[in-house]
Amino acid sequence: MTKRVWIIWVAIEIAAVLMLAALWPENASATPKWECTSAGGWSMAIDGRRTSIPISEAATVLELSAPDKMRVLNAGSDIERKIYQSMAWEERGGKYYGHGILREGVLILSVSEVLTDTGSTFTATILGHEEPVWAGGSDCVRLDQQSSLQATIQKPEKKQGESFLDAISKRDAITGKRTLNLQDDTKSFQKGQAALTSIVSGYRKQGITVFKPGDAEYDRVKAISERIIAASHYANRKGIRFEVIDLDDKNAFATGGGNFAVYNGLVKVANDDELAYVIAHELVHNVANHVEEQLPMVLLNARRGVSAAIAYTNVQEQEADKVALVYTALAGYDPCASVSFQSKMPISLWEATHPSTPRRAITNKFNCGKVKKYRVPGKVSPDVQKVLQCNELFCNKGGSNSTVGGLLELLTDTAEKQLRLELEREIQKRQFGGN
Ligand SMILES: [Zn+2]
Image 1 (spheres, rainbow, N blue to C red):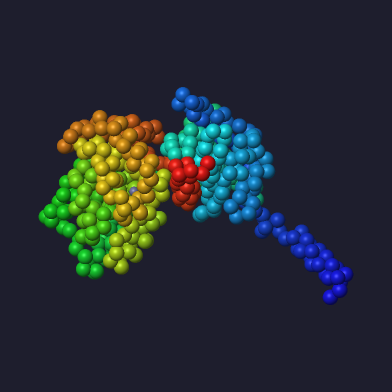
Image 2: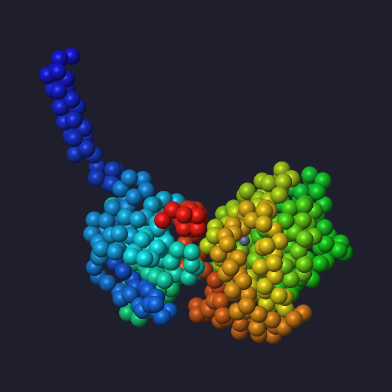
């Protein structure tokens, strides 16, 4: 081919591609695109006070570019554009999770956002700290989909003065997702029991002992569990089931609706206060609905006769710890046993499936001191209902049926795992040189 012919041939090819692109139906090749307006939020001042971010009509237009980048076609502010530039994105189950590390003067912030077809939630924390310093939400419309019209019609009316968390639960009601209502929890309860039955029979078939009432191991777990359940959001639930399995793993797992299992390896190394904390922790994984997605894996492992393990995200762990400390204290056990327990098992299955970070241990140490006052040693506190409603670690303003959840529940999955890796990398860099 001469040079001239080759150029003509390339030109024809390009023209063909352009023609095809022009003929292609717009929706088939459209990349995800959102138009979002702020639904409010808050930021924290240096003195710790929260200042609200007003609801705004200024639209931010985002478009997914490349597989993991979000292009800002219209930004409300420079800082907003900077935040989106810092974040990497991942799609999972129709939701988009963004996370990044942002340097703003002397501050290093970790930022994360969860974007759905109808809205987004956003938080920023100072690197190495737990509590958000900035949190907000947006109402969004998908511009690339026909259903965006539907979303516009269903878009909730904004009311000034509405709290950020109220805004979330409202949006959740529209998308069908809402914070857990224990009265609607019957299904998880039944599923959790069926899962335990299946798990137990799996182990028995492998010749592994599952302890029965009258066995010392079972009776010890029973005595502690009864007090913890009575001090939990499941206080009024009858028939919660638990099993003690004779495997050496130092671990426990929840199967949903309050039901759980403990391995004997853990029963052997933990004292009563520590065991109480572990059971409380598993109970919260039930209450906060952390369980169901991963249950098939547990069943499969039981059938193989190996230990069943559910891996949670760091955010779910923090949530479970926070509430578990309150249960432990209300049940009359020492909530600070959470600290001795974690230091007792530096490398174990517990560590692998309930991810821990140094900051989690530090947080427990700090938080257990705050909830010690709820403890009546040796028995269940008479103030369970009142304390569970509002206490030093969480406050539940959504009525008596709602429990934990809300913002924390929304920030989950891969974004959090990736964030944790990045946090650890950053912390290491700061500890061992680098910048
Ligand atoms: Zn856990």
